Figure 1 (cartoon, rainbow, N blue to C red):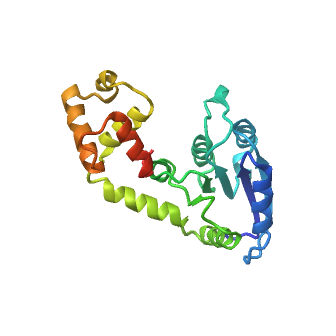
Figure 2: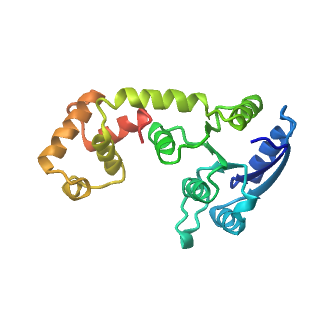
Amino acid sequence: MNKTDLHILMIDDHPSMIEGYKSILSFNDLGLRITTTPAYNCESAYNIIDSTPVFKAFDFAFVDLSLPPYLEKNIKSGEDLALLIKNKFPNCKIVILTSHAEAFILDAIQKNIAPNGLLVKSDFTADEFLLAFEKIYNNHFYTSKTVVDNIAELHEKSVFLDEKNRKLITLLAEGVKTKNLPQRMNLSISTIDKRKAQIKHFFKIEKGSDEDIIREAKKHGLI
C-alpha cells in the first residue's frame, strides 16, 4: 500500500466510538489523508459494501463484532460483515474491534476471519490503537494483550478440551438436554458421558452437575 489517501470503512453501533477512532487516526505519523465511511448496524454496512464498486475498494475496515443484525440478508454480526468484505475486497485490511474477551470467541475470530488486527476494546489506549493501525498498514498483524493471553491459555487447555468437548460445553450452555446431545454431536450417550467425566476432571468438579460445568467454563472464559 503506497498511497497517501486511505479510505476506511468504520462499522460500530456507537457513533462516539467511530468519532474517537477518526480522531486518533488523524494523528498518524504516516502522512496519510484518511477518508472514513461510517456504518452503525449490519444493514447500513451491508448496503455500503454492496453498493461500493470493486475499483473503489476500501483500504481498511474497522468492524465491531456485536451489531444490530440484518436478518433479511442473513447478516447477524460483524463476523458476517468481515467475511463479506474479505470476499468482495480481498486486499482490504480488516481490523476486528470487540468488547468480548472470551477465549472461544477470540479464537473463532482468528480461525474464521483471520483478520489483520484483533483488539479487545478494554485493552487499548489511543496510543496503542494508533500503533496497531500503523503496524497493520505496514503489513504486520496485530493482536491486543487479552487476545494473546486468552488464546494462548485456550491452546494450553486444548489438550484436554478438544473440539468435541468444547462443542459439548457450548451445547450445555445453550440449554440442550443430555438426551438430545447424541443427535447434535453424532456421538453415543456413553461417549458423551465419558467426555463429561473428562471435562469434570479437568475442572476438578468430578461430582459436579451440568450446571457446574457451565459455571466453571464461564469462570475460565471458555463460554
